Amino acid sequence: MARRCANESLANMLNITDTVSIDKSLKVSHFITGNYEWNVAKLQSLVGTSQLQLILAIPVPFNPIPNSVCWGLSGNDEFSTKLATWPAYGLNSGNLVVWEYNWIWKLDLMPKLKIFLRQLCHA
Image (tube, rainbow, N blue to C red):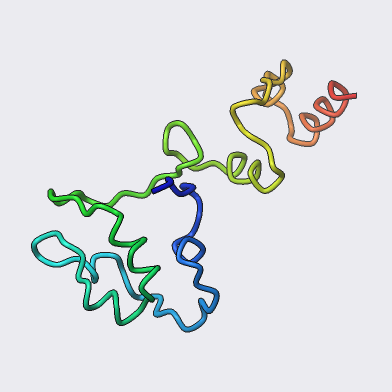
């Protein structure tokens, strides 16, 4: 099975177009048994056969792993608005060159002067 894109939503992966009728309180844990297996009966009540096969192909961990919040588009799992904005413009954070005038942001100046200096250096 081909690996799915990390930032693809589950609704897109399962080709679910009517997301309005989905119960937003449902969690993945509601569909896992105490033996760390998928609860097939519960899943069948919500999704079709082809969607069910996609879900069942995802392995359930045997050891309880605590949930954590992480950002998959950065190398260190931390979120920044810069890294969230780049994909929206089709940019890849790995290809960008470091701007040689980053020292401007560290100056003890009023923000409007920093922005003015940035504009001078960018011209």
